[in-house]
Length: 395
Image 1 (cartoon, rainbow, N blue to C red):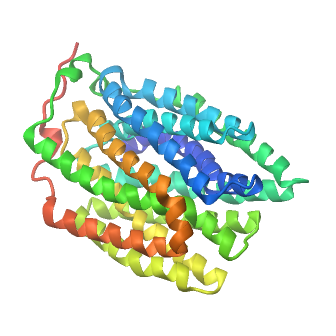
Image 2: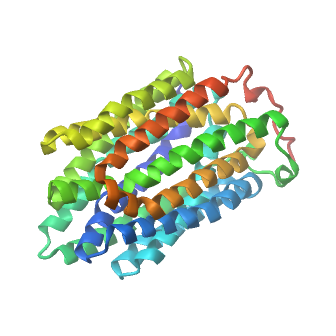
């Protein structure tokens, strides 16, 4: 157990800084930036679509290259590119900023998830993914509140945004420095891995996951950028209130990640998946039917926490079915499919939100549940662990 914790300590530290900066940027600063500069909901959606498009471009190559060159180089390069994003945004380059954020995330995410899988026994994968999301999310929950507080305390909103964006860039820079100390094993990188192909069973699993990722990605693209806009427009919340709402969301999501990670190694992962998406439906309806801000926020926090419990089980399930030598490639493909769907959702999300408003939230929740029904029907739990595969030959 002590060795298990030591392996995850440094990755968790990196993830804390990364999530802190991302929560400040995406959940508070970007929505406030668009309102401050009079950017329409449609162009707000286009900005996220650009992020998704650049994410897709880099995620497939990033995952595959991490199998060949190693996880660490791609992790560092990805975070280094992401540092440029808040700097560009405070300079007024919204679309270019989102492009750099997407490129950095695409290179980083697949490699980082594969790094965690390579460092963990398959019997503890759900727990590992719960920890790597839950603990950082718990600590980084202060990010949205901090961002909103900085903006609110400044002389003007514009000055507050500039200061908060520079602080965000600084935190991203610290993430890069900490990542320099990550340690790899020979199992993570081998030039011979580029010759390994997916088996028929692995291809089937990846296709199944791609179908699920396409639906989940589309729903996320249609909704996630617009929760903040919904509260800004319907309830007229100020920066501090918006930051507080998003901080509560992060806190409860962290608890959900930790609980789901622990539970996912004890019971059927797909049952957790289905139950989470089913319970999220009435919570999504509650967001838009509640007339009081406090009640609507309660439903929002609950919906985000419950739905995100699926992630540790989702990723652990995939990793136990794929050859460790080509995990990066598999993650790159599934993340790319998710990214394409998010790009489509974000591109049309502004128009859809303008037409039906908050009703997009329960619509997406129903989509999630339907794909969960498909998953439980079609996907099966692994009958054997991929740890039974022989490790790569030593050089």
